[in-house]
Structures are given as structure tokens and as C-alpha cells.
Length: 417
Image (tube, rainbow, N blue to C red):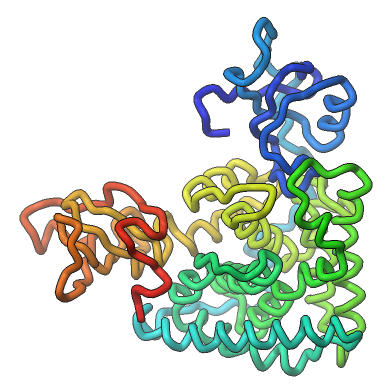
């Protein structure tokens, strides 16, 4: 979508021979898993039209001598008459609280790590129980979740760092835990009380639990899914709901609603009920953002991950279509331009890791400097507040660029240890 050769084409103007490089919605909501393919015939045009109003065409990969008309044949298709309750009024019913940081990221990292490991252990136990025909133990799940929720309440930076670490665990495994974190982070940002944050975390953990019942050959298929296979993938919602309802004690209704509706979309284009706007429960609208962000920034068998910056840009473009604008704004405010754990190179040539954002100056976070300007490891790591760099040094030090994990041999997962 961000390539210079990319052009927006409405479905009625789509022709065989055009190379589709992007959709008007997240790829994971469609059976088109390759993230780029040549349209071969009118059947594929019709299939695309079932899911999309428009697509993005890479003219450099399309067949020559095609007339690619990018002029819309109809007015702006931003959805109209979306059911919307005023956001502030809706949040007010939850008796919102104002959170403040009670610890630094450095202080919170070891606490969050323990909480994260306990959740991983509980997830293992839950998967084992399900595999043996037993039910989800809500009490144990709550006990594992609450310490992480407490940590996020004190300072979300540590858990944001953990959620962004892409471990070697299976996608479904790491995705469930990361979504629980992202849901909780968004909830904190909009001021939901801790009891709501705990429900959001539980729901996030259970959204995709039904995928354990989907054949791995379909879940891990690299090629484009057939309509039958995509329909089976969508069945994971029903499977997750059944597991939740069969749990050791009554599952909170808010969690049930969250599981049932997290694939609904703000403009009514989601599934299974095609409800829209604030007909979709608040927790589900939050989960939709968390689920999508973690999916598109993770390595999956059929798609490469995109960067945080690319994900934020795309999801911002999808506001009002797939996601509620106010919640997208809250998510971006919570995770920032340079989330905790981001490796960066400074204009001074030094290399470090972002340890804290500065809310008023999001392009100038606090950075733990690891390498000097010659890219040699420093004898002592120093924290540099880029918002105050002009006050403490002779040069205006800024972030020159972000770096991929592993750059210069640095692994974000071990930098704090």
C-alpha cells in the first residue's frame, strides 16, 4: 500500500492481469493470504468484490497495456449511518479512572517478566487440559492474569516491550498472550478500571483458543485459502465460545461478548453478525484493534511481519472503516511512535533502546544508549532523554532511524538482563 507504484482501483474497474498489492481492509479478514497476487479472471474479480470496495494495484507488476483508472466511479465510500454512541458518554458508564505511572520501566521489567512467564505456564496448562478433554479453569486463569494487569496499571511500558518480542513459540501461542496485553494497554489508556482491565486480558487470552481445534494444515497453509477453508477458519469464533461457555465456572458475559464479536468491524463488514458501530461491544472493538495489530506485526507462515510504523499507518487509514476512530487514537497514544523496546540509531551515531516515551514529545523518547558513535559497546549504559538533549549537550540529538532486532548484534530481549 505504501509503495510508489501502488494505485487505488475500485472493484468495478478491476481487470484480469492487474496485480493486487493491498486491500481496503486487513488481509487476515479475507481468504487472500499471499499479500500480493495477479488477478487471473473475472471469477477472482467477483470474489474480491465480495470482501472489498477497492484494492491497491502495483502497476509495475501488472500486465502491460492495461488501462488502470484510479478515478472513483462513485462518491467517497466511507460508511454512512454508523450506529454510534458518544464515546465519552460510553466510557463514563464504566466509572473511568486516571492512571499515573507508579514505577519506571526499568523497575517494572523484572516484575512484568515474572507475570508474563506465569501466564505462559498457565496457557500451557490450559492447552493441555483442552487437549485432554477438560475445561478452562477460570480461577487459575484469573490468578495468572491479575499480576500482569497490576504491572500494566503501574507502567505499561514493560509489558508493551514484552508483547513486541516475537518469541519462537507458535503464532497462536504468542498471539493470545500479546493480544491480552494490547487489550489491557488500550483499556488503561481510556481509563477503564482494573476490574475491566482484568476482563479485557482474559478475553484477549481466549479470543483464538478455538484455533486449537482447527487442522494445522489449514491454519499454516501458505497458499490462498479456498472459500471452504476460509469458512472453517472463521469457525474458530464458535469453537472459542464453546470452550469459554464450558469452563469450570460461569464465564463473565463481557468476555463471552468479546470472543463472539472481535471479528465484527465498525462499518458492519465483519462477521459473524455484521453488526456495526457501537452495536459492537466496547471490549470487542478494543480486541479487534489488538488482534489486528499483533497479527500484522508477527511472522506468520503465509505473511511476513510489517514494522510498527507501517502497522500504525495502515490501521490509522482503516479508522472509521474497520475500527472506531477514538479507539485507534487511544491505541496510538498508548504505544507511541517509538514503543518501549525499539532499537534506534541516533543522529550522534550512537545506538540505544527506547525505554520510555515522552507524552508531549513523542518523537523524542528516553533512550538507553548501548553503543557509542563507533558502534562499540559502552562500558556503562546511560539513559538519554532526547526531549532534554538540547539542554544537556551541544548538539540537538534525535532519532535518525529505527533498527531491526539483531542489528549490530543487539537483542532487545536480553538488553535488560
